[in-house]
Amino acid sequence: MIQLPRSTFYDRAGTPSSPCLSDARLLERIGCIQDALSGDGYRRVTRALQAQGYGIHHRRGARIMRQPGLGIQSKRRFVRTTDRQHDGPVFPNLYRNRIPDRPDQIWVADMTFIRIERGVVYLAVILDACSRKVIGYALGRQIDTQLTLAALKAAGIQRRPVPGTCIHHSDRGCQ
Image 1: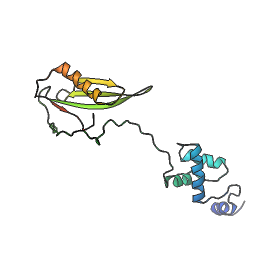
Image 2: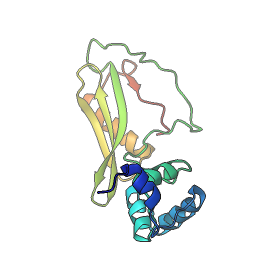
Image 3: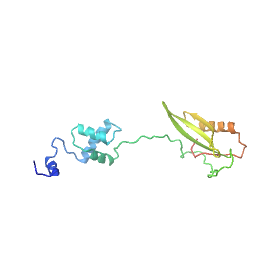
Image 4: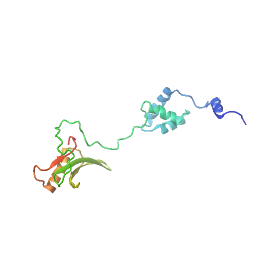
């Protein structure tokens, strides 16, 4: 048995079969691999480097990929339905988080999206702030003014509020 500390043995032995790369050279190799395997994270990139004969630990690969932002880019899991950077008029907030004491006093509107097999559809909803019930909605393929107006029209047909007594509140989206 050899009376030698393990760290000394591995330090002296090295790994002659694997070429030692500087971080800059390794960064070039990672860039080439990511061109071919776009969207892969540090584990797959490290395995690809190891398959090419480079002795690299996955932690070093992760550290190098983290520096210039070569890591995997997360996909957006939501669709933005509100655009506050529009040229349309901005109306004052009449709602001011008041708690309504009767139905048809404050209607709250919002939009969302629903993923389907062939993409997304958009849902515009109008809620009564007092009862929190859906009083109007519209479903469409495009997020536009016609969709929100269809939901408002459906709510108006169902509830028929007295003119001048109902506040319609929504976020400041362009729709």
